[in-house]
Image (cartoon, rainbow, N blue to C red):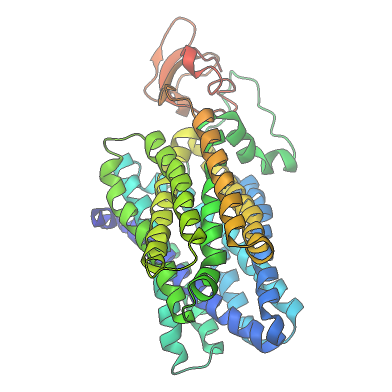
Length: 463
């Protein structure tokens, strides 16, 4: 899998992602300590509000970026986002009011909402071969999981010799390093599809239409509609782990706070194991089988967690909980790792940034729903109620995804275009026929293919 790092451009972009993730991890630890200094016993409430602000920024800003991304140089957009995040990290040590924390968190996460979808949309152009791209997706999944394990340990080591304010300096340096690596990468030019001279000019629409283009694409393509449900299933599981791990460890098992990282580490370990083996699996098994299999597995894992939660005593509960957390990580990774492959095949190249921005926004919308739900249910109704409710959401969402994603839908669709001039970039490899041009490609819906997704089974789509 490391062979993909031989590509210099991808190597620099991946390094940029890694150092930015480490910087973000350090900022997360430092923000918790800063909130305690400012708010004392109300620090938990401050962090909960900051998390909500983060999700709102992701949901609102990502689609707006998707609307204008095609007009902006991708390198400049990512570098500006990194410099913005570095600037926010520079100011964080000097805040002394809660509202200032909220404002800077919103700016920080808004910049992340601009950087991440743009970065995700660039990688398919850098690695056009599907095998290479699949390996890159697994590398990205590993980076996220390793960051969740490595950053707290690094922060703990640094805090033994410095104050937490210096962690913000590490965050700033991480984002500056990310910006430098992006500048050093030779990014390929984005693929565009100009309007053909012989065809009527498409309606460009207003700002709202452009901002919602990626979301409308999700609702137009069956596989992407299924991905919406899969996002909800994963959000239910990840919310259970993220929000209630400390409750299970401290209150349910009666263990010390030092065990909490082991529980979260079990989740990350399960995710990493799947990310490592998926490139070979996806050579032989379809994305649909892997992603739906992972989603359906979540229901079984929730059932196992329910059995553990119902037990009142027993030393077996601790290893069983770690095993369940690892299974949650594995199942979520089965869904999340191939997501980029699905979006790349389902969206035309010129709309990839909008599609990745929509995925970024819509997936965080699901988390914005499940995280508060997990927190409220765990605190007010008890852990068993949280397991049953979130498990039901995961099962219903998984079954809905299975229903929405047709089992026999072709990966590619043969269809005819009329009214496109010779030499149009979309017609590369097409065969000229009496009425126009005949070719095949992945199933997606855009201005040139308004009915491709809905008429895929007929193999006859006009433009």
